[in-house]
Length: 244
Length: 231
Image 1 (tube, each protein chain N blue to C red):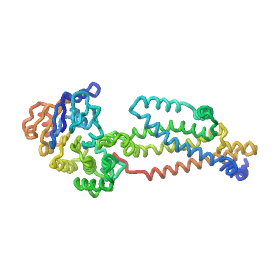
Image 2: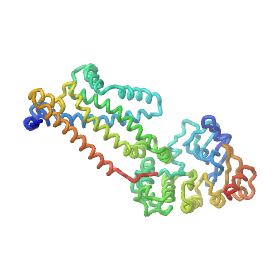
Image 3: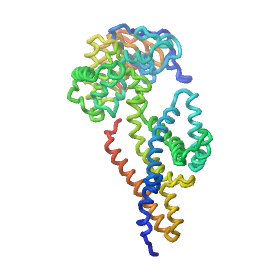
Image 4: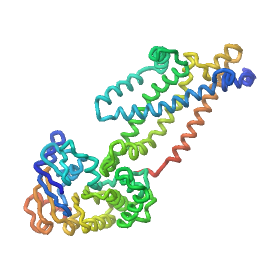
């Protein structure tokens, strides 16, 4: 479904992705973790070409991201993206945030798009907020609307870039619950997160990155019980007991 | 100092609409006509220039920015003169003075408006564009449905400033003999000779009322368009 082959990326002289090889199969949930500046956000942003890669090969759902023939808008319509800062449209109601893309791109009739949007809002538990504006919602609610907005395009892949990092602790659970539910439905997901509980319960695989290199790739059980790499051991230790 | 405003009352219709309907529109009517038409044209002119100046293609961006910066570096009077002499030469026929003035005001104001548009667009957080293109929206759709509606709200106060300037700048039409409010004022002054103070107090008051009404209207509009401030 998503295949990185010897992918490199530089920001000027900074080597942010260094020979990345990764294969995400259909229906798989992959959690990417690592210290800040490790390139995990850049990695996930290359999948829908918010960041272009400089070298190597990257195919997503059969589309070659370096090929000029690839229809980027079509690719992005197939790939949902959820941001750390939600990025809901502040000038549109919750319902319009969700229906905009289906109406404009899929040419879905307004009424049908709204019905589908309502189903998605039910699913994320926010049907009563349909007419609210984003700033009237809590962070956790905004992020759930953002997930519904991404799902409205019926994507084949969902990408999450630190979806809970900007949230107050008591709101993290409600967002993770929606994501877990989505994973159970068989969605292909790549999730950048520090929520190790989520990784342990939901992920099929955990990828550990540092300095643009994938250092470790393992099943969550294996990764948490017996990390191979020193950097991974240190990272996990710091996550579990941040005071030391 | 005794002021005698009888001269205003005697010439009131002339101040307001010139010789209309027996002759061409003049006075305040013409001032408003020049301002409104130039305002509408330079709104679109500014929008187009602003968008082009942000184009990702240097072939478009560079000449547009050169044009904008050239215009911004010239006095408005110069631009009006240009149009006055250039436009008939280009068109190969005479162009009514009021139209050359509208062209001059439009070109000049568009250049300034483009900078407002540009700043308004760049003021919208990058995450909005990323969110929009991530759902598959095309570049122009993102601009139309996501960026401009948010940017426009930031642009309104600056737009209003620009339009108030525009209303006052129409007085420069006087120089090429267009009988707008200021020109009519000097005409009446030359004819009657003895009331310059009264006449120009009156002219100043009319400009003030016009500009103030417009500013108040825009404040009302701003509040109506207000949505809750986002992150």
